[in-house]
Amino acid sequence: MRKRKKGKKFGRVKAQRRALMKSLVSSLVLHKKIKTTETKAKELRRFIEPLITKAKIGDLHKRRQVRKFLSDSVTNKLFADIAPLYKKRAGGYTRIIKLAPRESDGARMAQIELVYE
Image (cartoon, rainbow, N blue to C red; front, side, top):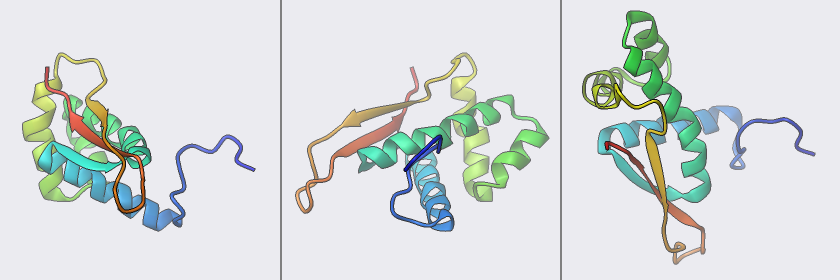
């Protein structure tokens, strides 16, 4: 029985879930929009939004915290290119748009993108 557990399991062990989220966060930072399953997009939001908030602050400590989760190149892009766009935004940095189900297995698909308005 699932009690007070944050996040989805995705049928993976912890290391695989962490690697999946690292990969999705990196792709979202690099490409600014990605297409994935709806559940993964909702879970990705839990990871990317705190990272953008830390990047907005932009001091050395926050950079090192983000660096623990992302690679150097992705961290630099997050701090240099993406964070300045959100200086006046209090939160809600991502948008999830539901798409048609995937043809092969019928999984619910979604597009998650960074919001810049």
